[in-house]
Image (cartoon, rainbow, N blue to C red; front, side, top):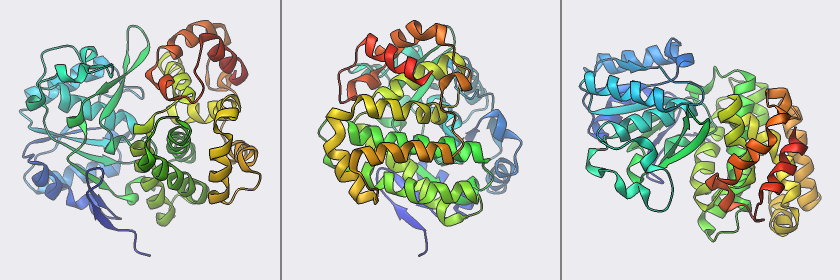
Length: 381
């Protein structure tokens, strides 16, 4: 099977190996003539980034680059990126990289024409309507990992560097105009990043499938996304050059991001403060929290995961699925506890207070309390 296609859901997507060379056409489709490529520090000097800049320069689009982006991007990174965008006279953004580069790039495009602080647009009620929609410049997204799915998302996660809180900033026009999904860009991912990002996609699908909200389309997408991760993440982990596995994982990442319009839950409510306070890798943190959260939610999700397990070819219904999750984590080299990635058990009270305020709580199938979250953190520590 040839894994290549042009899709229009949830946005315009050019999918297939080698398609990064279509960056100039994607910029033209989005109406961008002077792009700023935004990525993270780790990618800035790698050959895939240089190649993308060469493609842009050869097409007369310049080689504008901003890479002052932390693994958990914050408002300081954002301010510097907006300044680079304005002083460079750019008219659009190419968000290039993993979750950090994609999220920060989208926010640079969003904030470049706003006059209010970014926190005024947090994903609370209808705060997004405060933004000047006409001032949001177009975005082309190019993922280089297969995890967050931010390339097809309408929001970004930005860490408040002062309070160490992760905030979700939302606006419908933050959805990139064009996405280029080229699995060749993910071939160089180290095993640990392949595992962490892949399990992030899996967590998105698991929590969307668990959410009690009504959204049958998301439910179906989440189920197939779980299947793709089950079948192809072990292959991508074992052989990073397996382009078929890499391609299916890029699809799974987009599916997870699309599905969680239905909601997230306790996994993300816990992972966000851990990442903000201890600067942990988001997908790895999700993976560590997942078994405990599945057990906590068991009575509310058992029936639907009995069905999911049958579709996924996992014996034992919900209990078999939960056992499979721990086995998958172990196969991917994921630590079993949060303390192994630097979390401090003395901070559980603070972490629980931050987690209960996270909007992800609203999608958990069991209503969460601070005490529930303290208990979950203790289990995961």
